Image (cartoon, rainbow, N blue to C red; front, side):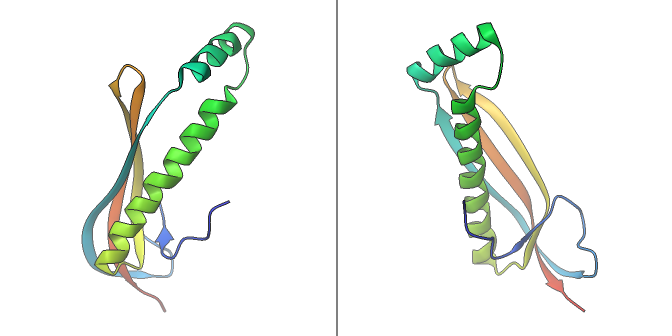
Length: 112
């Protein structure tokens, strides 16, 4: 389990009870992961009988966490208190590899 984040993360456009006092700009993090041939074979069998492909679930969860950590590092360098409007995107970059991208708006907040 990863450590708690040092800055607030939100998919919303504002933080209840706080005022955005400065927009620092777009921050992003990404990673590209490739599948392993063994995982593809196991996934093929799972596709026949149905159910979760746990190796892929784990790989994607790790990719999301790595991308989030990279986005947080970028926001921290800017002096952000929070990242708002966080969104995820993914794209295939080659036959057996995909990119996972997370992005949002780094901001400074005024807390009451």
